Image 1 (cartoon, rainbow, N blue to C red):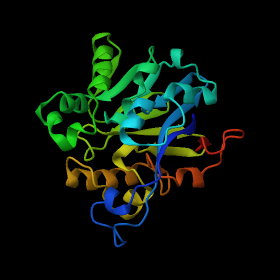
Image 2 (cartoon, rainbow, N blue to C red; image 1 turned 180 degrees about the horizontal axis):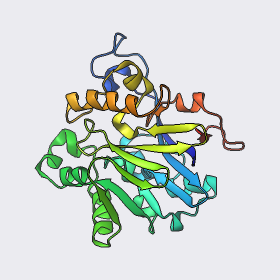
Image 3 (cartoon, rainbow, N blue to C red; image 1 turned 90 degrees about the vertical axis):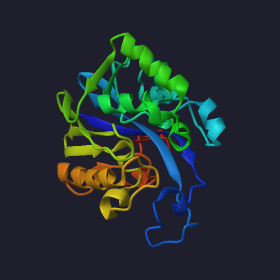
Amino acid sequence: VHEVYAIRFADNPSGTRGHYFLGTAGTPADEPAPLNYYFFVLRSAEGDILVDCGFTSEKAAEWDRPHFAEPWDAARWLDIDPATVPLIVLTHLHFDHVGGLRGFPAADIVLQEEEIAFWTGKAATRSEIARLGSLPDLHTVLDRVYEGKVRFVRGDAQVTDGVWVHSVPGHTPGSQAVRVRTASGDLLLAGDAAHFYEEVEQSHPFSIFTDLVQMYDSFDLMNSLVPAGRVIPGHDPRVFERHPAVPGLEGRVVRIA
């Protein structure tokens, strides 16, 4: 049984529905759609596991994103020593989910084989794909591969007691969601298989994908894995509206379960 926390380390307050959604889901394309950047902490008696690890201030400056803390410093908000984090589940290899990896030097990684194959294959250099990746971050991942610190999985797998990964392709070919056993039942951290609640609740696809049909199928799979309302999207500001703040860390950390 785990506690689950979301750590907010950056924002994009200037996004619009036309930018983020395929089509406009029946609303004006210029309607504001702010987006938050999170990574997640799974806490149990056995220690803390991270789901994703954010991106750095350098990348935030490149993308003009308000950035509150380096991910390894944000982890310290929950009294986590970044030097000793043992395990990070990477939902996929876009820059905003893997860029903080260098700040967690001891961590093993859980990653879908299909994801690393995609980012080292010919499609990775195409402009609309390459802009969401980061060669320095990929080098950091490959260093962990050669250090024997990457646990590759194919499809669905158990990570540890009470934590499972599920293949949810579409956004990227090797995207994975993380199912967590909590005191209130299982919940699913969607990563970018769902950026916003309405993707899984109303089947509104995100504008960035490698396979639209797979994206729709992944919405269905995620909804089948946990009860309604238990899929936690990777970027929705309403995560912080639906869950209570950790005292003293208002606006920065919420406890999901």
